[in-house]
Length: 359
Image 1 (cartoon, rainbow, N blue to C red):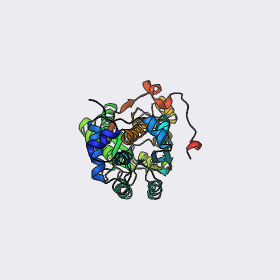
Image 2 (image 1 turned 60 degrees about the vertical axis):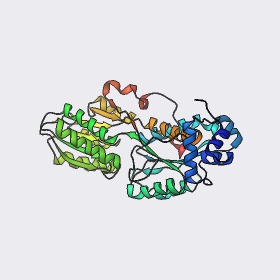
Image 3 (image 1 turned 120 degrees about the vertical axis):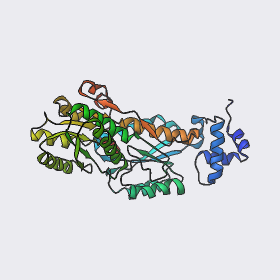
Image 4 (image 1 turned 120 degrees about the horizontal axis):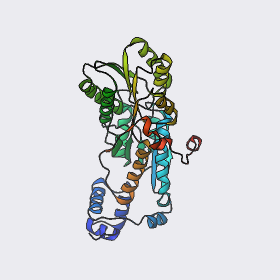
């Protein structure tokens, strides 16, 4: 197919060259119907702008991306942040600019932060949604009133009209953890789940997936308790201490968030590490000793760095190439065990930015 330029695109859409330019850049001066027509024709005819020429002609940042992700738990979100910033640096020459305004942790009140980003002339918003009741209306405003594309990472917000979401499919994550657990523990075992907040879609679906498969794979097995730690290390530790005191015959724990350190500490301090198998989520250097002493049996890897990379790439392709967002992108989970720890990015030596550079 012969590729077309801006003038041919304008002619096919029966609009001016200026209207095409405004539509491709997502400016408000073009009505939604016309914008969709131009983007559809551009996609059908393989329209690809000259990125370097566009950046030089504009002479300013024209892909301004707001980033609102948690700081804690840093083991996970530092990797996600690095993926976002590393990928953005590859596109600085075409005017990509990041506006980074993190919140303390998942579930923190984020409305004020999101509103400030929407008022800062951004073209897209990369977001880890926490409370769906709080966040969904703001995503609606961003997409429908502000013409800002919203990309949800790590956890979806299907109550909203976000442009896309990137994660490991959460129910699959839980199902995979359950199948592993059922192979680690004997039949009729009692296990527990430690999660963040069940109300968050990612956590809720992980719990659902684990529950379905564990009951099917472990004959007469039961889930005795689901603990919500709210991504708080002290709260999670205290609740796990209580769990271990209450259930002396517990055989396993599935940790659906990256917040595994307080769980492992509670198990180790109880002297029951030999009798409780733990399937966790993701990987970071501080977790390695718990793999080495068999407190952690396995972990389900969600690749936060790649999630961040992919989000930026999708925004750039949409703004500069008029590519549509896929409704959802699910990454393939990997199983981490002691024998393959060193294969993962989190344990590889590489140039890392210090946290202070981003705060």
